[in-house]
Amino acid sequence: MKQILVTGGTGYIGSHTAVELQHKSYEVIVADNLSNSSLDVLDGIEQITGKRPLFEQIDFAKDQACRDFFAKYPNIEAIIHFAAYKAVGESMEQPIKYYRNNLLGLMNILEAMSHHGIKHLVFSSSATVYGQPELLPASEKAPFQPATSPYGNTKQISEEIIQDCLQADPQLSAIALRYFNPIGAHASALIGELPLGVPNNLVPFITQTAIGIRGKLKVFGTDYNTPDGTAIRDYIHVVDLAKAHVYAIERLLNNQFQTPFEFFNLGTGKGRSVLEIIQCFERVSGVKLPYELVGRRPGDVEQVWADTELANRVLGWSAQSSLEETLLSAWNWEKNYRAKNQ
Ligand code: UFG
Image (cartoon, rainbow, N blue to C red; front, side, top):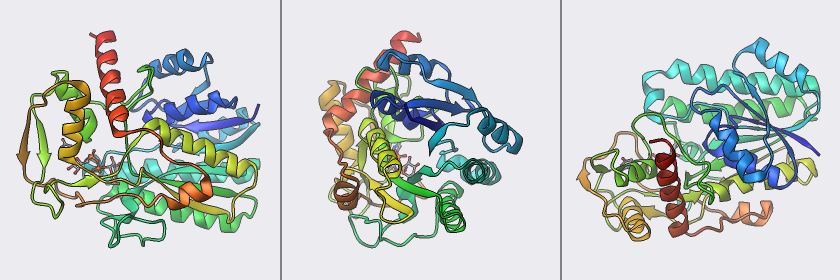
């Protein structure tokens, strides 16, 4: 059994990826500082897969803790590095918190990889690196746009840091996966997205409104240059996204990569407007969503969706779930979680 380290493994995407790795018989070490997730997630992973992953509570931004961790686990073959802060608005208010955590964590991990001969890294990147692309769909060749938030900047800088480290150490190889908008939850409704406080993202806000925790959804911006005036994104089922990480890990472990650093967009290739998401959610849930149309949210791009050709052809992966089943999974998770935690 090959051992894979999943940093941020109790988080939203990390936990779904741990499940997919265990389905493929990898031995998973979940490592997380639990700053934005809880140990209960391990129960969910265990219930789904029949196996509890190894777990360590650790902050990879702390040098000594990171060194101790890798000394304790000498058999790691590859790392999927999710552990990072991800709230765009918070990063504007507390930029140092973002640069410190997201960049130090990555640098400590890269240093440990060279030191311990761990060759392969899959890195959680983001479509945010493209900003508002000039051409749609956004391909991996689209140039980086100046980041609109410190969070986005950490993703751009992280890709550059990885590039430099790969040049310095020819043993290393890495794949950056650039996520579009991950939504939904595992079909079992045992793991899912659990934002702390008021959700920033559209789908958790929708499900929390539908269940009665939030009064009304605000639709940010109705004057965009799009068919219905609301902003367009590429919403992808988190389980499809998680599966792509297994493809990336296998590509690295089997030395199938063409260059030491590869980049793939993870999206569906379809753009949906905010109003389309609301309508689809109402249809699948049977719940009428109270919402109001308000002004644009600062920092939002107008429209972006993925060119998935490279991921389809080279990685051999494509998103499978329909928007209906994806939104239904988000709704089932919300209902199940609230029923259990009343
Ligand atoms: N939106 C609303 N109302 C809400 C929340 C969101 O109308 O209450 C709209 C936003 O204005 C946007 C769309 O829904 O048009 C999607 O917003 P999200 O916050 O769900 O997602 P973003 O596209 O803004 O953010 C995502 C990731 C970030 C990443 C960013 C850019 O969550 O991590 O894409 O790639 F940085």
